[in-house]
Length: 498
Image 1 (cartoon, rainbow, N blue to C red):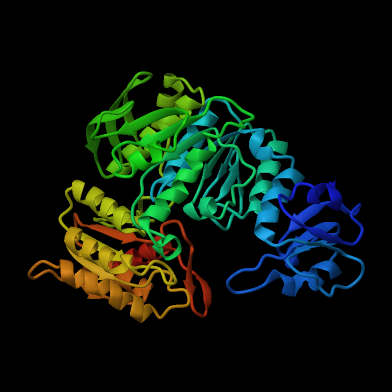
Image 2: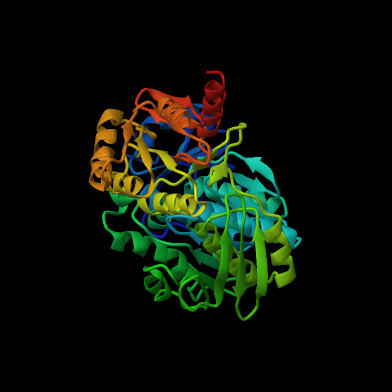
């Protein structure tokens, strides 16, 4: 609980208070539907709506103060805090309100285009095996020692994020593993957090609808490594874990003024993998370095997961976990939902559901599938609406080049016409087709999955790419339940019933 006056003193810039500055604030929210008595309501202004429209509703529900850019006509005697920029003010106020939980726990941030979720879960698994009480914030969910909490963004906004962290600290969490998106870094949703270990997985084309250029995209990622390199740290022992094989590694390393651990498969690195063996359900390889020399047998597969595992080993070492504990934990780790996840329904071919929704991740998933030596690869994929359009033909071409039968379908079209999206993807498919190669376009995603299963023969791999763990599909008319894994099982059962 803090007073309006205490909160305002944290604002770096001008502000004006209309009302009783001694009013006590018991909570902060930007969602008028979840307001509780004593809350400060934050009027965020977004692309589609202005929070100020809901300020009166928030006050009627119990908000005692409102953070806004302009004076509002509100019921009762709610305090109004007026600032030039609400987002900047929130960055100052909210971490202070929650007593800076991100400075009290060990914070491990994982950033990169692909691999964040799996890497985060492996780190989480290792730290738990080491006896720590661990929290996780990621794309799929938030966890506190395996208790699942709902989450809506890869990195929530400042308010939700600080609330999660405060809850974790109150529950005795000592280490937090976070997926840190480029949006969160660019928009400073991570304000008030002091990271201790920062992991860079890779950088490939994605989110250019937001960042515009790869240079801007890289600059956003670099902010995580600038964070751990600041002088005004409360905690000690800062380490950057960097994929040295990635073309953008040099750009990341230039921003690191702390301990650095590199990892890779191709180049010389502090953590290097060799003697790789990759099968459909498992993989193994040797890891060598100054603090580790082990042979790993894993229950996950794919070259991309070799990189994810190396990154996790580096992060765990930076957090003081010994080699024996790391080795034992990795041997017992199983796949993350929707990340090269096998779907078993008694069929004599493999079905894999994967979250690959970028050119690089799709290519890696297809390359991994090809390494299993299937008879054929059938790839069901699409591209999301209201997102980077430039990657659509690129992904189409990649699917044509690496799959035997690419099947273009709808992903999450959102407000766009799914037919138009599919046409842009198919243009790339046609560019990459080999003479005599067959492809299909089926806009309805369920029908496309059923068609792939219908075409599949013994020894084939059906790769269903793009949505992974998601159990919904976002259409112009609303969000519906849709789970690729469920649909694939239905398709197999239907095929058996023919």
